[in-house]
Length: 183
Image (spheres, rainbow, N blue to C red):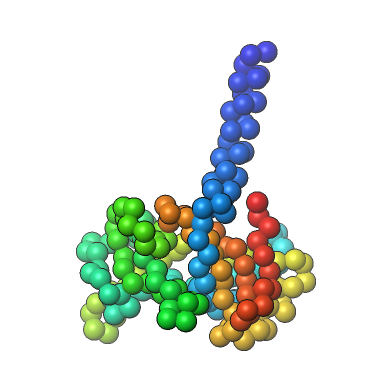
């Protein structure tokens, strides 16, 4: 009987761990607006969703104010420092670190290197993944969102002090189109 109880506790802990992680980002996360371009709104098995192509996914050394980490390769974790624009709306990358930043009070988002590419000038560009590539929508609304002007759309994410992030709202200008109900 004790074995079944212990097994039950282990199963509950395994189920609760991702939920607690999401909840901690919701509780401690800072809202950040990212520019995006939606694509492909339907998956037969998962329902309607919008694939998000974030503007911060591709980063070139010219985009940054700091140094470029040497020796990055596919699969490496990175931390990208974000700075909100002068109008306070869209955040842009300003620095990349190969190691987790300390408690410096800056806004950092954790990502993974998907590709390292050369550019015309010979300097590399990075293709990064942040785990923010899809936003699930109510059935039938994916196609309507795909037809909107991508220049007007943005994704509001929550980023906690560790750099963990999750999608929070899909917005058109100041209008909230969808909110994440993934808790």
